[in-house]
Every structure is written in structure tokens, then in C-alpha cells.
Image (tube, rainbow, N blue to C red; front, side):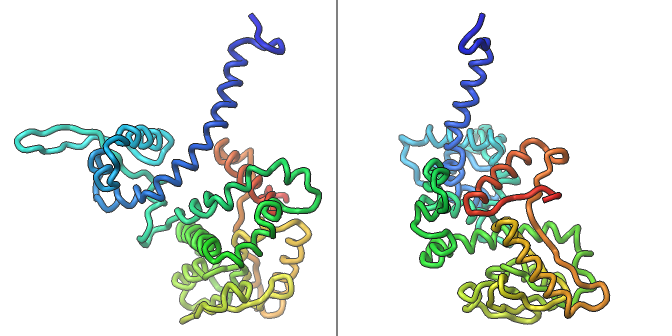
Length: 334
């Protein structure tokens, strides 16, 4: 028995399910934003143990008419990996009852605000801000426009220029980058040898210095310089072995034994990346002693043969996002 275009009914139903899954998956980031806005990871963290639905809605002050809906949302977020569903024993007078409870997972632990541990919740808040996320509704208009970038079409000017004029969004962006930079703590555990023997390092595009601070604390004898646009670093003050310098990486970069480029190159075209890398080479060529000079690049690398399918899918989504900004994620060869 065949369906449309000579395909079996089973094949067509699977195709329909694929379309529906992607259509309704718009709810995934919205639900993620909801648990962050409601501070649910913090609530469970502060609770100190798995939390029951009744305890959660009590903290959230949810109307009784919405309790069942909260339950559906929480069970879905557990299904996609943000919570674990477990059982706890509740004492009520002389009786003991076993109830369902929600516990944190590795994913929701990364959304807890206000602790010393890495938190990437600000990145979600920035990407899901309506001024940013609504722009994706205009992809067709962007593709048909010869010159302008997506955010120029939707915001009236390039993204970085728009952020500079919008303190609220700029604050969100800086918090997002700082939160993402905290993850470097995990990388440093296995890659200390990259920084050994260095006396000076420049973190190009280092923002508010989160990454450089982590490195400077790990290597107190290493002089760390955060290099970014003057408007970014003008109000930031250095201390101990950490300092801030304003400038433009397309003009020149302060000289040091090593130059760090963390998530910089993916913002730019190949031609602009070559300009940046040439300036990095000039910066390490003069001052480096012996073979100390190095350029350290931290970027997402697309590797379909090595990565799991879900990781590859994520990397392709990231490169779609960077294409909109005018950059790209790259393969190792690229």
C-alpha cells in the first residue's frame, strides 16, 4: 500500500512526525527559559534535597488551578534531561508517605545562579531575549538581502553596535560570556601544560576578564593582559598579575609570550581571521624568548567522524547561529 509520491504510509507518518517534532520543539527553549526565570534550579539547590511538586508550587506561589500544568512541564523537563524523578518519604503526623520528587541533573546544575560553580543561565537569557530570538523569524528576508546581516535587518544596525547602545542587552551578553568562560576551569584541569613556562599572556577579546582571572589565579607568576575594545575595558581595574588594555585587534595586539583567542575566530570571516592571526603572530614574534611564543585557540571544531551525532548536530546549529552574525564554526582543516 502506498501513500503520496509512491512512499509507504509508514514512511509518510514518520516524515510527519519529524516535521511535528521540529515544529513543536520551539517549546524546548521556552521551557528552558521558564525554569531559569522561575529559578527552579536554585529552588531545588537551596532545598538541599529532591523537591516534591507540592513543595515546589508552594515556593513558586503557583495558583491551585495551575498545579497540574506545572507537573506536566516538570515531567517533560525531566524527560529531556534537566531533572531526575525520584521518590522521597514524607512524614505526616504518624503516617509516612512516598511521593514523587524532582532532583537536579548535571544540566540543571549549570543553571544555578549565585554560586562559585559555572553557570550558563545568562547565555540562555541572552539568546532567548525577544530582541534576539525574534530575529530568527526573518531568515527568509535575510537570505534575500544581498548585503545586510540578520540583526541589521531586525535591529537596524549590526549586533555589536546595537549592544553598545543597549546597556541591558550588553549586560546580558557580558554575563553570558562570563558564565561560558567559567567552564574553562574544567579544561584547565587537564591542560595546565599549555600555560607552563610562559611569563606573559594576552587574552584577546577577553571581555570582563573571567577567563584571564581563572588563568591568573591558577598561575600567579603569569602576567595576564585582557585586551578588548576601549568601551569594554575602560571601567575595569586590574590587580596583582591581571591588567586590562583597550585597543583594536585588527590594528595591533600587545606583545606577550602567548596570545589566547577564546571564541574569537568564529565571529569572523576567513579573511578577517587571517588579519587577526597575523597580528597575533606579530605580537609573539618580537618578545618571545626561545620557543615560548604560541597562539592558543579555543574554538568549537566540527568533526562528524569523531563526535556523537547529537554533538555534531549541536555544532551545526552553532555554525548556523554564527553564520547569521557573519562568522562560522569550522572543521579542523578549516
